[in-house]
Length: 115
Length: 115
Image 1 (cartoon, rainbow over the protein chains, first blue to last red):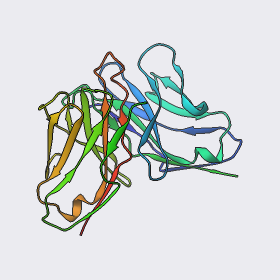
Image 2 (tube, chains in turn cyan, orange):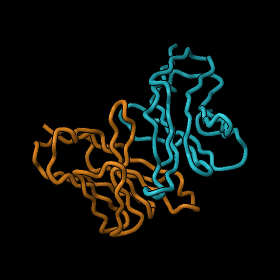
Image 3 (cartoon, chains in turn cyan, yellow):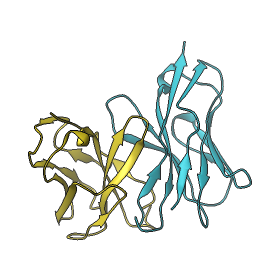
């Protein structure tokens, strides 16, 4: 089955600094990769996706992600973090196996941006 | 904007009760999903449906069933609630693949406590 791994439970960064939230994937075939964000007491919101094409994908709220096939990674990045970016971030991959077109999610990374 | 509405934000039930979690989407999406979210485990797929009266098991269907009698509504049923089903339950929907179906739209979640 397609899967993703988020190696960090928590990432801390100071406001104004660049941030990176890591994700690696394991798939058979071409991956469909996603990032979602969850603010406290809210559902998940879509940030961006990679299906094909340019390896640098731009998404909502100034976030971007870089698809790296040789490293099987899809790290989320932002050049300058805001306190309001503090949230739970999930990487996901589309499962084209038994679960049809559902997404398989990583365990999540908590991002804390301090003033 | 797509709206996915979950009927209850918080729910407290007793062990052995039959529990119904309701989800309604207003965008005529074919696909609907139920996930549960637990700290440190991320999101895990319980069931999904790609059409009315159709259902498929996800990764953790044991102890759950679903119903989809109308396109816009997808219900999750806990036949006999147990304490290990205490969790945040998230409903999602998406259009067919090829029509942006890769992107899931989530409801705000139902925090279920089974005592």
